[in-house]
Length: 115
Length: 111
Image (cartoon, rainbow over all chains, first blue to last red; front, top):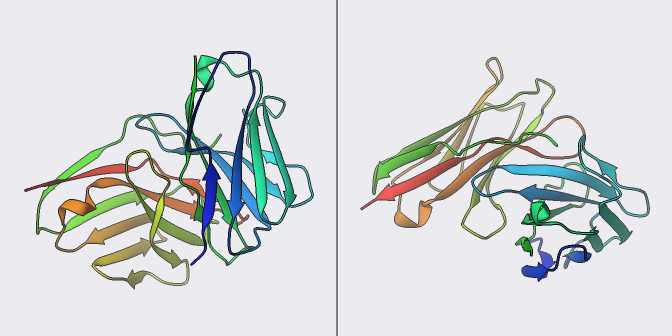
């Protein structure tokens, strides 16, 4: 079946630094990738949708300059949390799809802790 | 962002009993629905899906029911096992290609 690999699984960074999270589709071409954020005991909140080769579409309230998304190839999308602060600490999850009707495959998530 | 939940509702059932987890969705244009299981510290795991042209779909030990009239979705798990303990989310595809998640329910199985 479809597999999505997300790295790192956890990261601790200092306040003010930037962190990059990678999401790779291993056995299919992901025309669209999605990034979610999940706070403890809460649901997944969609942050943005990215299509290969074009700019990401951000959900309302998500700062595009803080959460930089790059989807340069059909198998890789990255999320960079810039100038991270403790309130950015969360569980970040990516999802990939081969197109409408092809379903969604989720990565295993990245636990970000900003100290 | 969309569908930010507050505190997860919980459901406790005895091992071997059937569980029913409910979900109300918001967008009448949604035409595809998925149930996910999430264990602590992991990404969501696909359980079962259903399209809007159906009202019931069965898998192994799981059944999804869709009531479009009242925008309600349910997941039935038969003969629950300890390994079924997790948080369960419904998700809807609101026309455009993206998934919006519901609030989630924490299922606890008592021995």
